[in-house]
Length: 339
Ligand code: SAM
Image (cartoon, rainbow, N blue to C red):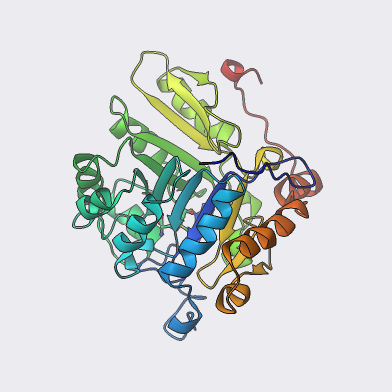
C-alpha cells in the first residue's frame, strides 16, 4: 500500500491508533465506569438508527488508515454485546495497512466467541479483570458475574491464538488493592501481561476523587518488594503502559499512570464513538461528527480530508494540564526506576 500521509497535530503527534466503540451498551455496571446510579434501567442508550453500521465503521477505518493509523482496537461499552461482531472483524482484517487488530472486553461472552473472532482475523485481546476473588470482582462489576467465567474466556482466547493476552486491572483505593498481589502472582510465569491502570475521572459520572487513585508508583513498589522488577523500553511511540519485567525472568507487568504521570505528549490515539463522533482525547466532552458526512455520501477521500482537518487542529493535553493544576505527586520510594 502507498505510504500514508504523515498527518501531525498541533503538538507534532501523528495519528496511529483508532479505538472504535462499537456499542454504548454493556452487560456490566462497573462502579468506576458505568455505575448503576447513572446507567440504571431508565438510562437512554443510543437507538439503533444512530449507531454506525459495519460498512460505515469500515469507511472511517479506511480513511484513518490512509492518514497513518496502524492499530485498531474495538471497544465499547462491551464490544461482544454487539451482534455479529465477527463480521466487522473480518471486514477490518481485510484492510491493507492495519498491523494490529485488537479487542478490549470484559470476557463475559468470550469463551464461546474466541475461535470465531480469531477465524475472522482478530490478532489479540485485552481482558479487563479487577480481582481474582468473587466478592471483590462482583463489588466492582455490580452484576454478580463470577471470576471463573472470565478465566474461561481468557483460556479460550489463548487456545484460539489471541495471545499474548493483556489483562487490564483498574485499582481503586479501598476496593481492590489486594488484587495487585493476587493478579501479579496468578499471571507470573505466563505470557500474559497484567497492566495496572490508575483510576481516572472518565466521563465525569463515577464520582472520581483523587484519594481513590492508587498511584502506579505504589503498585510498582508493592510488586517490586516481593519480586524485583526492572524497566523494559517501550516497544513504540505512544505505548500506553510503562513496562517492567521480573528480574528472575518470570514475565512482565505494566502500569498505566494516566493520572500521576500523564502521557499526552505521546498520545497518538483517536476514538470513534458508537454514533460516529470522533474524539481526539479520552477526556474530551465533545467530538466531531463523522456520521453526518458519511450518511450524506462523503467519499473515502472526503472522509480522509475531514479526519485530516480534525487531527491537524488537535491540541488536547487534558491529563497533563489537570495534573499541573491539581495534583501533588505522591512520594513513593522507587529506586529501581530512578525516582
Ligand atoms: N467492556 C470492555 C471492557 O471491560 O474491557 C471495554 C470497554 S472498557 C470502558 C475499557 C477499559 O477501560 C477497561 O479495561 C476498563 O477497566 C477501563 N476503564 C473504564 N473506566 C475506567 C476508569 N474510570 N479509570 C480507569 N480505567 C477505566
